[in-house]
Image 1 (cartoon, helix red, strand yellow):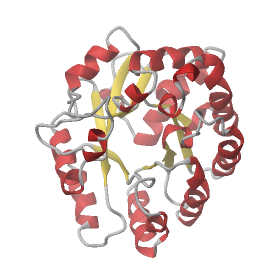
Image 2: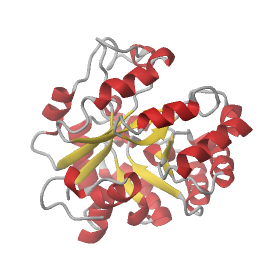
Image 3: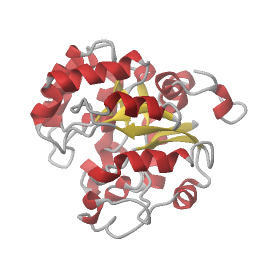
Image 4: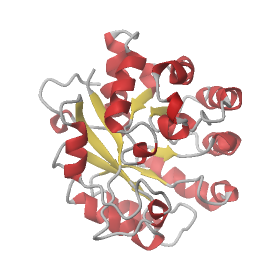
Length: 290
């Protein structure tokens, strides 16, 4: 099963600030470069990536997208998902305009690190609709206890495609399956919501980094969304807080091995191509079209 990694972070400390990473020992003070990623994925089945904005310090979020634009088209990077600030009118449309020349194929504003009411404002929702009007998806990163907030936002923006990052963040370590599962089911009932199979080992205890522990969560995601609404992400280097990238790739293959080849292809590459508008010329020869 080939994989397009729709959630590849980089930590480029020579250029940008990452206060959040400095609070996490596995990431603190370290850089994570395209070459490091290539080393992590060597010999695996990752055929292309999308850079995912990495939560840089507030002053740097536009500089990050401008810097990464120089990497798009190299090392298998097919495009980027840039950070934005829909809560602020000033400069928002100008930023969307600039991003058309930066290889940007989608946007994200991390909602679990801001006040819950930020995404409920009229301004936020009006500006989010601008993204949808341009035919671009919005990655939605929320905790399991914020599923109701996410549902309100999604219902208010029915012209916007949303991608739930990290399976909508189940609290696997605390074994809180039921709370997460009910919220995910409600979100999946909204047809313009997709989901990203990523990030879950960072939410699990070390003894849960195995197929047996993770299967109920992955099976529920598949049951709710179906493969045609699922894409895959590595979440490197945050995945190092969990199983690590090579192990997560291996777990992915094992967790999806019971699906048909067509369903594996959808999750591995096809849905990502469709959601993010990846052009066939940006993928290796022989890659199945979406």
